[in-house]
Amino acid sequence: MNVHRNVAGSLFVVTSALACVAVVVAALVLPERVPTHFGGTGMPDDWSSRAGAVTFLAVHTAGMVALFAALVRWVPRMPAEWINVPHKQQWLRSGLEGELRRRLRVDLLVFGVGMNVVSLSVTLSLVQAAHTGDGRMPVWWFVVLGAWLLFTIGQVVVMHAVRYRLEPVPDSPVR
Image (cartoon, rainbow, N blue to C red; front, side, top):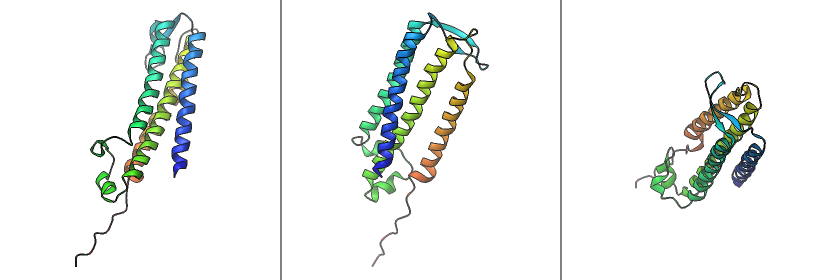
């Protein structure tokens, strides 16, 4: 099952790189005045300088990439009592702690990919909004945000209902 980890890891690297490249491109193409806060209709209600917007985008993107990369690296060494997944005790009693940690790492990579997509979409949407006459947030950004929310909720449901579920281990008969 290393395929899932390899796919998730590769997707994490690719989306991290894309999100970081987008920030560099934004630094080159954003105008001096950038819409940076939007109301529910997508209209800007606050603006920032290019330097302020790029600083926010860089810190947000690098921070999310670093956070998920650090969590993925830490999972194999973290104390078992800090692991918080459904049926943890059953996993530990069954001698499957290594598999539990592997699955947790894959799940963190998947959530990291999701956050990288959000970071990338924030950067691209700010660039697009800054180049429109009214500064309106593009509609596609709301679609991406909704898709990310649904994906995250779905992933959590799968984790709780299926991914960390173990078949009951029968107790050994008493003689």
